[in-house]
Image 1 (cartoon, rainbow, N blue to C red):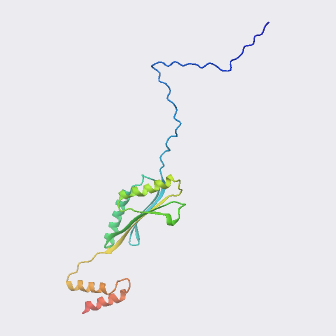
Image 2: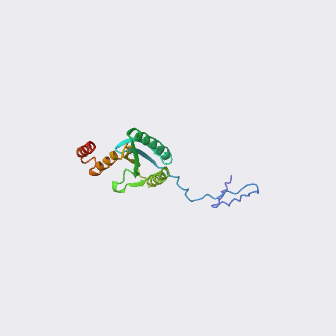
Image 3: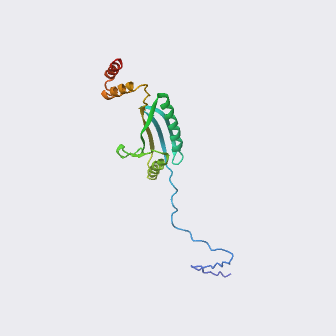
Amino acid sequence: MTVQRVKKAKHQPATAEIISDDEQPETPVSTKKPPPPPVIGEYLLTAQTYVGIQTVYRESQSTIEGHWSARRYFDESKKKVETTANERGIEPVLESSTATIYSKSMKPADYVTNDVNEPKDWYNVESVVNHLAKSLSKGIRVDLVIKYRAKRLVKEFEDEEEMDVMEIAEEEAPLAKRPRQVICAYYRLLTL
């Protein structure tokens, strides 16, 4: 028996693939990286509304940007302020409405403050939250504080003399500094 040795070719011949008109050629695979998924910022929100030093409405929750309704908060807050104003006989005057945005790693000097006088201003706050989330900041917080000053309503006086006496008493000294002297002066003027 004879043994034949078959030499194997080092290079195999290239195979040709025939594509018919019905088949589509394979699309080349892109080597580009796909765009990163959008970053959605999660933050802890604390919103408070004050009339004078009294808190009349408060809300605190962990939320995702775009899910908290600033309009609903402003509406509910306004109702509570009006109720308090009617109960106390005052006129509320808006002093400030400010949101403070910060993260765990920020120093107090770096905190971002933003005026939020109406609900549409909340988009600016959430854009800062989004920026902090994209920079991978942890522990993002937003503190919204709305402050109203309590302005006393002027009661109607029956005669002009009583109104003049009240104006003189208010001009002499503010009530907070010398209340006893003002009351005594007011009493003396009334008894004349």
